[in-house]
Length: 90
Image 1: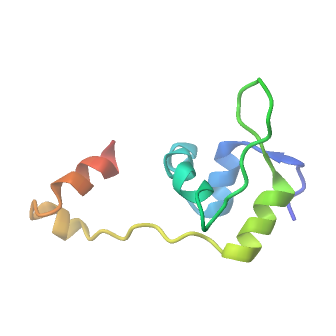
Image 2: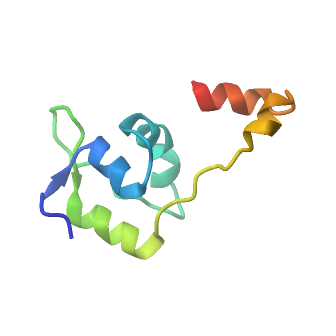
């Protein structure tokens, strides 16, 4: 269980094993969609977005850490997956 009641996107990214808050925010819509149903941020009018730590911890307990897209850099170098390379660096 996390000691803080609320987590920023950077803390959520770290809990999920992602490299940055931007990486988490880029995957957020996919994580929040069915069947994963990642908890949404707390409704408030201020920034930054905040997630309840207990909900995030519970989701990780139920679903585990999401797998990252393991794209072989050698395959990207061949040019066969140019769009994936552009998406990866966007």
